[in-house]
Image 1 (tube, helix red, strand yellow):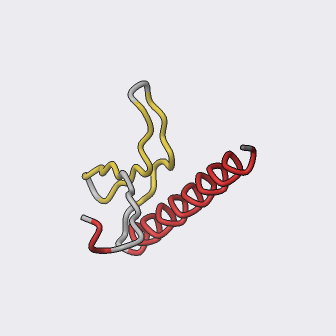
Image 2 (cartoon, rainbow, N blue to C red):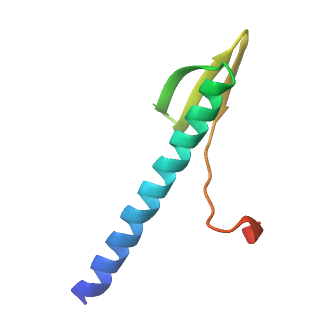
Length: 73
């Protein structure tokens, strides 16, 4: 029984790591396209926003999603 819990925990940690890596890739892309990063993992009463960035007068809010396969939908 403990093994199943360990597998779930490992899977959750792996997903967390992949998500953070995807967020970093998005952050680098925004920086390379002249966006100024205002916040990372911003928390509000309604939840979390992965990235908040600004370019000129436009502010963008980014929710990063990661998938292993491009045909996953």
